[in-house]
Image (cartoon, rainbow, N blue to C red):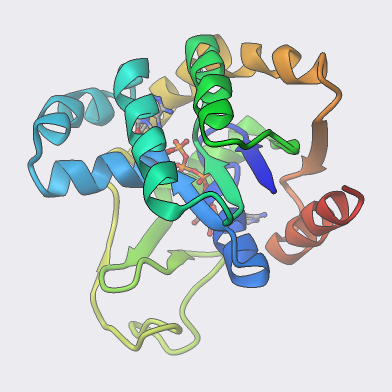
Length: 216
Ligand code: AP5
């Protein structure tokens, strides 16, 4: 199965993708994570992307589509894919169609997480992750069970994303409205879009997505 999780910054795409990976053995393909890894490794792609990401703008379509193609090639054709944060523009949607066809895959579902944008700034600016295993937390909504200790791996090191400040988040939301939301009709015309209330508690959002996948 191949699915796209669509929604503005902080809608919960990464949170839900992680849970689906655990439950279904699918693979999460997050272009944001791939780009952050490239920035950290100071690859040519990372060196170019860093300033763009710090401003909250979009990296070029060709760069992110090449990352997705390479990842699909590496993971083999038998594992399901969850596209998280990709595609984000109409050209990327077209490139994804070509990439999937090249791998003998097709899109099964596009799941839009519907959220109240005003709540998202709060979600994003409170977000932090385990520096060791990447488990996600939030200052108010999801704290580690033992303060300062990661639930999953026991690490005591945590980090925050440099683009998780209010000014950059506002730019990311504007980019979403201008360039990403307009791709929904492409998938609506194919009858593969489902909508989920992304403001519900995390477990309820997962249950709603599971219900959509079960109807396949
Ligand atoms: P990316 O990393 O994709 O960031 P984003 O789309 O802005 O999404 P986020 O990761 O911020 O949010 P999310 O929806 O995953 O929410 P999360 O689950 O973490 O992209 C970063 C940058 O990379 C872009 O700005 C761009 O520059 C570049 N880029 C990436 N892909 C690109 C592409 N395809 N083309 C061009 N450029 C690209 O949740 C957020 C917080 O809320 C967490 O703390 C979580 O615990 C909490 N939370 C989640 N769900 C709930 C809930 N239901 N209730 C309460 N709290 C919740």
